[in-house]
Image (cartoon, rainbow, N blue to C red; front, side, top):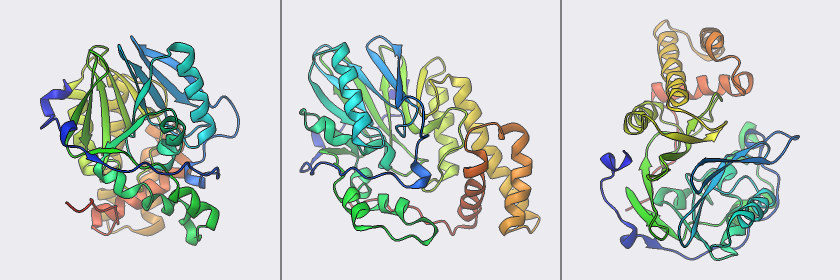
Length: 326
């Protein structure tokens, strides 16, 4: 179980911070854009009182957990309209107060709907690095390929709702007799949270888990990420997983994603050892990965980026967000 690697429960010692202004309505940058057609999300129920909102065109997956006296929401989509729709779906199921939102990491497609829930009284919780990055690092998604963020885009990032409570290692939230555990684990951004509901054996992995999808590695440390996935699978061999992207997952699905990261690292290392670099390295690794992973959505678009970013990581030249000062 997840408690085997919880080092401390720090909710009582969490950092209280001021709540921010509502988020502006601006389209997401290209790398974070969801599909243009289909439903914004589909609601599924992987466990008693646990709901997963599997995104179709709303960015990353979200979900919510219903306790005896309160509701906790996990992530809030890529913009406010689908977050508002999620709030409406919650109200179809329960009228209990929505007391908490947990952001699994800072990326725009998981936090841009926070304001919808703080407006009804929710407290936003995240790892302390997420608070340091949500209004700074999100700008880079508007700066790709040499682009300069517009004033409207800067205003969008400036208005993102920061967490009210931050933690370092782990915390436990009680929803009226129903514990929910939130744990920091490294890999995707350096500020990732996993949300575990023990009595339902359901784990929200955030973007530490992708189900048959090519991931975003812009902030990743894949060496740590592979180890994190091994830990999650070992701790929860029979759990149901709600990944950050893709459908509800099993342990086998998480193992397959772990294998993708491992195979990617191995193929890049092999190409580098053979003296390859640049486009030659990218094409060699793509050819090696395509038979096994070519059918995964995002392979053609994100596969080359994954290779280039992993090559930089292995060479020690990749820039990743730095942890907040103590």
